[in-house]
Structure formats: C-alpha cells, structure tokens
Length: 104
Image (cartoon, rainbow, N blue to C red; front, side, top):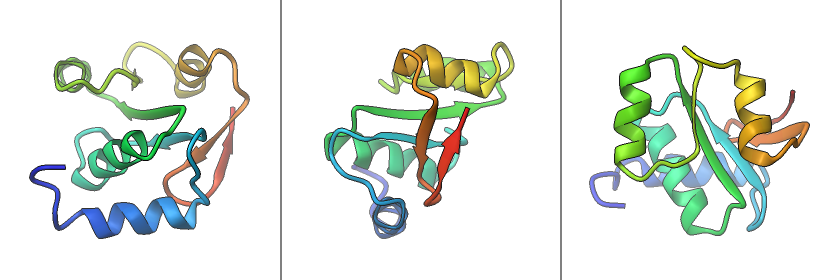
C-alpha cells in the first residue's frame, strides 16, 4: 500500500471496529479520501468479497477505475443503494468501514 503508510493504522482500526473478516463486503465511502482508499485496499488484500467505494464526482469514479478500483459507485449517475445491489448481486446490507452495518 505504497503512499498510505500513515493511513494504514487508521484503516486497520476502521476494519477492526467494523468486525471485518475475509469474505465480508466493505463499503468505504469517498474514494478521493486517503483513509477510504487505504480501507478499500486493505480490505481487498485481506480477502473482502467486495471492497466498494463511492464518489459524487464522475471524473473521480473514472480515475479510481483506472487505478484498479473496480467496485466504485458513482452517485452522480446511480443511487448508493442501487450501486451496492449492482456490485453485490442484490445484498441488502453492507459492512461499512465506519463500524456499522448499512442496510439498503
């Protein structure tokens, strides 16, 4: 996780507080933020079934996809819940990196 060394402890704390385990689905909103990026990368590296992020900016969504963030929800073109259902194949809830379960 090059360039994220200062954010790694914060990402680890967020995942730990959220009860993360391999195979779970994680939503780390705000792809442009350094901690959200670190949480997404760490969750992927630790075996998340889905490591999603979101943005309200179409250009940021395209930039994130170019950086190999494949599960980005662009809320300028779809609702957050619709994006979660699209990526997860219809899951009704997602483990948020902030330590709570979010129901859609």
